[in-house]
Image (tube, rainbow, N blue to C red; front, side):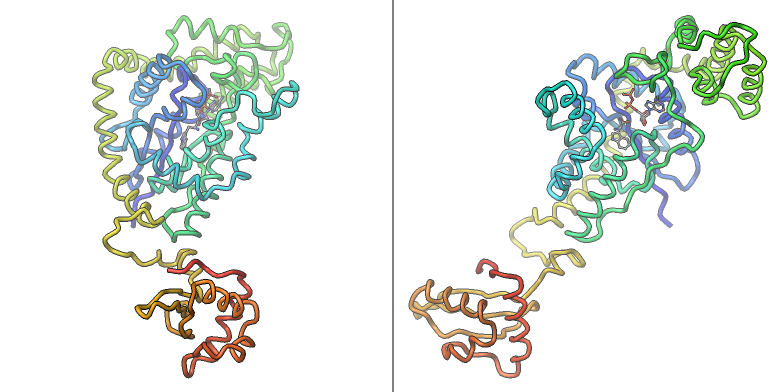
Length: 436
Ligand code: ADP
Ligand code: TRP
């Protein structure tokens, strides 16, 4: 049996925070460990360009995120760990996919819609500040996933729509060109909610409300102390529901630990004590990882080598697969005519066709072939191509009835039934294909 293929990426648009760790990094490192799993992890630096126009930040973030992943236990010997922009097949596949992706599908993407809604609410032009890169974001992401035929994609909840779109795009491509892609599914950690940030909204680089994953110990403590809470005094019972420190605690603690803290809330623990408990719980998990991270950050050349080796490993499957896809869509060497993709729409669409040609007698002829290329009808010679085309148009308009009126046409013996149905099909389809 083939290994289960798991793939995930993280956008190199800033410093990784606790939300990225809980929602993406930790679950995906865990998912990479079992035997029988083939994992792909990458730094989505092309995606970063959609949001970040600062080259220094993109580079810095790429280093930080690579170091984060390695520090959190990703083993580049066991998984394929690479940088998106090292794989030229990804933008190449993005183009192939964009040609089978309905614009309407992308119109429905949350991020794009949010940008439009914001502009509309402000009374601005709806497309103000919206790049084509933002619009195409889901297609690039589909290419990331489909290029490696990943079946499982560990992501946070906010990314689920993108995985669904990747499925839709894969279905469209397969429908047209044959079964090349497996359909990916999102894998969302069931018990991990979206982590709130310092201000209680979703923790996100875009809101500037994050706790950096490897902030130095003292900074981590300070940031945790600054998480917003309500104004209940020590001794007053407190609600765990909607409490940011509690939600973050839960993401690190075991079920009994969380239950104990919930009890402490009910018993009127002070916010200061809650935050101290949160700090200690997080620090217990992160301190050993931070040490490794700090060392790795001093070794950018080492990380560069790791990523280049990873890219080579990734290309070992991406390059031949992309070549197969190029072949499937018709980007082919010319010396050999290849058959239509088996099972694809191109094959299913094969239908009767008129072929028009000129012979050495200087006259213009046409013939009608069935879907398998068998001759159904042969014309006599016409003086001009226009006369031949007019005869074809007449046939298409009137169907079999026209045969009796056109003595220059010679139905093939024994094919009258096939000829009648071919003419019917052609008149239904409306218009005929261009001639060879
Ligand atoms: P950000 O919102 O900070 O820009 P990204 O969009 O780069 O984060 O997200 C990277 C990964 O981390 C994604 O899989 C995303 O779902 C996950 N993630 C981001 N923020 C959170 C959060 N607050 N809670 C849980 N997971 C998150
Ligand atoms: N868009 C994802 C995010 O912001 C990152 C990403 C890019 C990704 N390509 C991917 C995640 C492919 C999973 C699979 O989090």
